[in-house]
Amino acid sequence: MSNKPSKEMMELLEEKRRKGNDIYAFFHCSKCIDEDEYPNIGVGWTTLGLQVWCEHHNENIIHIDFCGQKVEVV
Image (cartoon, rainbow, N blue to C red):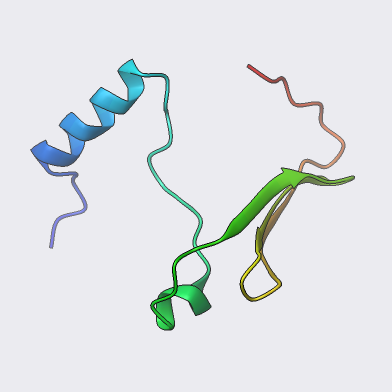
């Protein structure tokens, strides 16, 4: 299996970019995927950086530590 994105995927990503969406990969709760649950996540700033939280399972998905680096917001 190739890791190269399909033509359809590249077209979809380009359409999203034209609208201002540069996201090409998403965070998901593995428990929600295993249980075939609709995702309900919260994303927000913390004292360390940015956290993605599963509201359904009340668990951390990822907590990104910026190590004190300032992040510019666009």
